[in-house]
Length: 294
Image 1: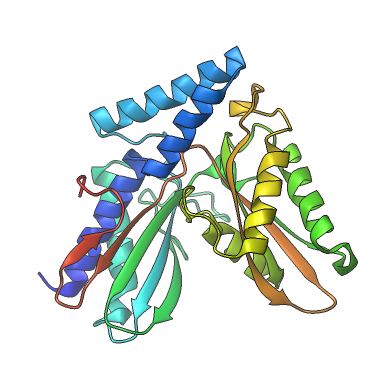
Image 2: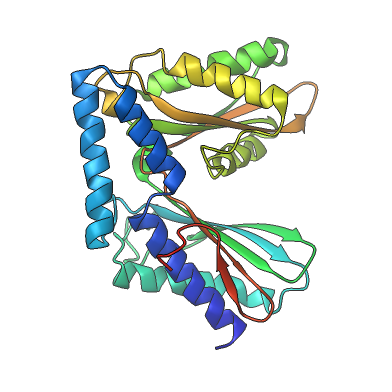
């Protein structure tokens, strides 16, 4: 099997893993929310979510009927072979996954309203590239559901508002989103750069596991403050009230222009799906998540 065939096979496996098996850190956070919940309605909803996760794993079927838009995050070693063929391999993997997993066809032409039927189309699946030293290829897939995507937003706040303005914008966004992104959610926040950079940072921040602290102490403190504030809102699981509105808040930033302070907020629903693997130059594969279900 050539290296491009390996990439396609691994990408297919990652899509399958992601849509069926939630990451362990997400499951642990949902279980903790259930154990700590005092609202009967919220506890019932969290129990239904946990049962849904268990049934998806038992029957090996997607955990949510909305299998999302397929987003890939690629960290490519500069010396990795056939980089120009990777995109085609990822597209083929997406088409195969649509038929074999199966995935719901979610790729629609905005002009004709025609569904491609295989989750591919212009710039879809979307591929985020990062070039690194070395000769390995790391692939992460994030199937992004439409409900949580609809609530993502980016805005340039007045620079004079600073971090207080960031906090205000994030909490107001969570309030406005309400039940629509299927809470409890993971909230990604991107600051600085341009508006396009901020939203990219916010979405990528969703990939950090919930049990991995932010290494920047200032960001870690801000994440905790926003997490605590969000969970005092009382929105709760699926908007039914309760203690847990968000499972985590993850923040990243870029330097900004003095006259501009872009801030973006991205949501992942409780079905926060992601899966990763590393491919080595000799074609061997290391699955970084979902070990045992390769």
